[in-house]
Image 1 (spheres, one colour):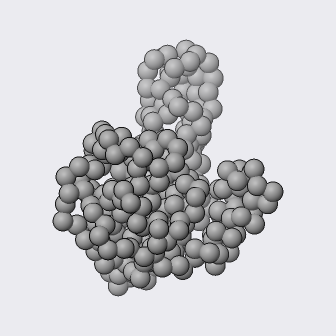
Image 2 (cartoon, one colour; image 1 turned 45 degrees about the horizontal axis):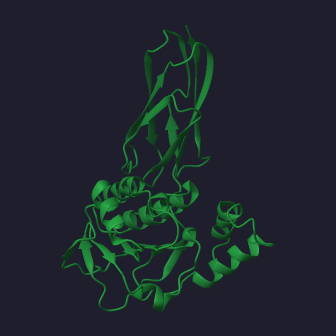
Image 3 (cartoon, one colour; image 1 turned 90 degrees about the vertical axis):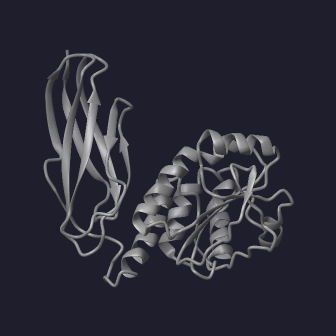
Length: 293
């Protein structure tokens, strides 16, 4: 078991399991049970597009796979968050050139709901509709939804367990593991973290008329020996829009983070934007201040 991984899951899931007498013990039990465990894919799994038309799809061999099992308990739309999965899949594809498959297996209580959600959110990849719950029958997945997503290695053994679209720290670990392997496969040594050089991180936007927007750009150069990836960004308020490239930044290359602040309310403001990635001392904190008249 990776100690850092256990510590991570303790922080991620402790609140969710707070009803238990000893949440850390419960998490440790799940991690210990599933670390390096092989996932068995039974014969006869049927894949479809949008949960309707069957498609001739076979799970390909790959250095990593992501398995997402979705049971029939609770609000499917709430726990799925397909729009976030689409963004995450795009990040992985840009990093690996589409060589890491994401495998959704649904055991739905309402097939029409699944079909509607898949079509509404345009998830245009083959998904498995497992009405007989065959996959769960042979693997006996944990009942908590946060432990029903797995990063697998080339032998279908569990590297990490946890949902990357529900928690930033889990997402960081998935991307770090996948990016390291993708870079090494090109014959280039890699480490999990790299070093960056950043331009200005504190901006005085001066006086902004109410209702207007102001944009600043931050240049980030990868000066380390490994690809740099921005895993996520967080703003201290909803009035801030952040844009960045969701692909690896190779050594000696530069990427730009654009931040747009929308001046909604009059008065002085002091906002922060956090940029999370595989660099030392993550997150990078960017500060914006000014006055709205």
